[in-house]
Every structure is written in structure tokens, then in C-alpha cells.
Length: 128
Image (cartoon, rainbow, N blue to C red):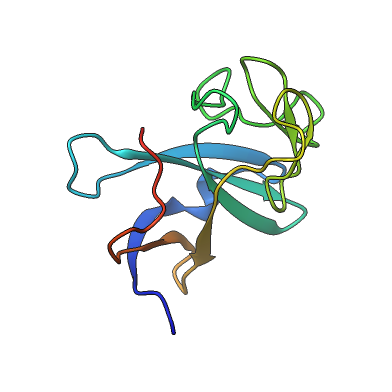
């Protein structure tokens, strides 16, 4: 059984340096936008909800700054937890062994980032 999803345009891939990251707000029609971020590293892209699994707080320490100083890992600004950029798995910190909630993202023919979010009842979208 496939899960129904809805596509949301985020912006241009050119807005996300390689290596680098950028946050986006998605207007899903709810009271508050859904906060997500995209990581671009070595030509690969990945996207996650902007929510630490330990505290639920946003991860960035400055606008669009989700990676550590070496651009190697996603880093939580509160406790310094480090996450792998390819899958969000926490390698170090209070949430070690947990993971960020990954979302599907693709680049369309025009170079635009498109997030695919589930739309069925009970879909796993974190409170933000």
C-alpha cells in the first residue's frame, strides 16, 4: 500500500551551497508553517523536519546554519548533538542512537527543490 503525499515547492537548489544547508518554512494551511531544512553535500541532498529529537527545539544556531563548522555533520545548537547528513542518525549527544525525522525531497527539471509530505490521517508530522 502506498502512502499519499503532497508536493511542496521549497525553492531553488542553487539557494543551498554544496556543502551547506538552508531552512525553509512550508505553508501547509495550518496555523504555523512547517519548518524543514535541506542539506546539500557532495552533490547529494537530504531534508529533515527542523526539530531535535531530544528537546523538540529547532536545530540551527544561525539562520540556515545547520551544519557544524567543518560542514561535516548536522549539529544541534542547544546541546551540540551531531547527526549524519545523509540520514539524520545521531552519532553524539543526548539523543545518540535516535534520528532526525527525514522527509522526501527531490529536484525537479527546473532545479527547484520539492518536498513530498504524507497527507493521510495519522501522518507523522511533528508539532512545531
